[in-house]
Amino acid sequence: MTRTITEKRAAFRALHQEGCFLLPNPWDVGSARMLRHMSFKALATTSSGYAWTQGRPDYGVTRDDVLAHLRTLVPATDLPVNADFESGFAHEISDLAANVRMAVEAGVAGLSIEDIRADGQPGHYDIATAVERIRAARAAIDQVDAQALLVARTEILLSDPSRVTEAIDKMVALADAGADCLYAPGLVDKADVVALVRAVAPKPVNLLVMRPGPSLAEIADWGVRRISVGSGLARAAWGGFLRAVETLQAGSFDGLAAGASGKQPNEIFANFT
Image (cartoon, rainbow, N blue to C red; front, top):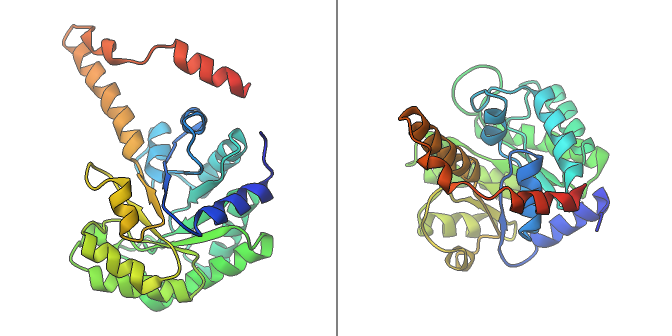
């Protein structure tokens, strides 16, 4: 089944209306198609996972790199794709808006904008500036297709987990500014997650899960609408690679035993040619 961009965006919006769904994060066409084969309903890119495929650190790729990545990955599957668009790759509002338009024109079903400063300065944008940027991103999306979702992110908990109240206050302001979905990576405790869900209701909340913990069913009971794993799958893949390489360095080939059979991916990917 091949879906149009319009159909993908409609399906993505519908997923946010009720229940809770998993939004796994591929880093290239192969991983995206494998997740499609595994019957997930939507995907989200990972900035760090993609950067590592280019031999660069997280935040080490350019806007043009990411746009090229989106233009390759989006048409490779009929699933809706949410783009990790970092801080929009621009400090100036006009540049941010132009970049967001290009991302939407690449066919994404949604994109996220972070509050990390994009002017080379450390730290995060204050609430007033973050609100201005989300409003500009919302207007830019609407100029192309209002059906595309805008996800507002605050990264402050990744640098200071104690700033939960500040993070929730910022999420409320960004929801009011036009964000369709709210996302605060680093939010972990049930009480804090529930507080965010209630504060921005009825707008959906994305929860980042990076390590074993509560089940999907438990998180769904908290009121979370979608769960992403960020760089989790990419780190798992790199972990297997590095463990195998370490055995090679030790003069052993035992680490290759854990690899998947080439038959399975060959059979799966043959369906996409």
